[in-house]
Image (cartoon, rainbow, N blue to C red; front, side, top):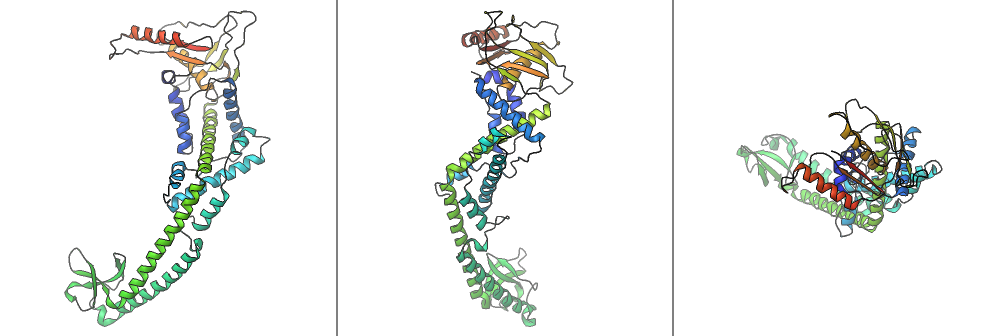
Length: 423
């Protein structure tokens, strides 16, 4: 097993935080932050091959991106309970499904070249009926189209006619000289959803109507002329009908999302995993990393006492060091399965120890290594006790704390474990 303490002590968590910065959307970033190294050789090899395959895509300029993809899992699950989804979010769902469809078909055509990613994307659920329903009802600005329903088209036609009639009537009022003289300005404005004109307060009653508001100074009254009340009522009623029909359309689309929720969730999970692998490839390219060779534990013919592990690192660089890094070489030969590193203070012993443990963790995450060459076993357990872990709360000295940690490691580790102990 790989414990959280090992991940923290060897600073794999910092590597994963960096990895998350290469992801394209929140679900991929979540996978990166929570990633746990595998202890299974076959799984580790597959992860390594996935990273290598995507790096090949980059090299071949194959267009694979997750532009516009969003984590719409919770929204889709909520839709199963009758929650209405806003038009902009429905567009996010459609964009996510559309991107998944495009990637599935692109990689499907290149299956011979990118078999692992093609197999992954084959699990995408396209939900074409839902995609079509959303695009037929909502435009690119997240506005409901007139064609979303026959009823909405009729309402909007009537709404335009009612608006034109109302505006024509109001324009005649403000342009008539014997009425315009009582107005603060010859303009039409709105208050509380009603179209009004600004009457000078000292001419109250000169234009009969309903007062809806006044200016902060009290000098202006915003009135709805009596002769436009019925037109305003007709217009407002049509607006409410429009809102009601839009809500009905959104609820119908939301229900369709709810019906497809499991497929949407699965598709987002596939895209999140793809996002993670893309991030691994970007991370490897930026580190100028190499794919490690992962090998099983095998008995050493010349030394039957050897546990069968392999550690060979040439020119490895600690990935968290920002200054000029001095590469190190580490090789456990047929007669070596314990290595003691000695030297003066500030000589790089701790960094070297951490580098070995971290490279094993990184390799078992499917990440390529910042090294010239690397060959490693996949360890069943990786343990580390490094640095000053004095515990004030438990009244332990630094030495006692190290001893407690070491005893715990010795209880848990076996012949397939990698153990890194600092002084």
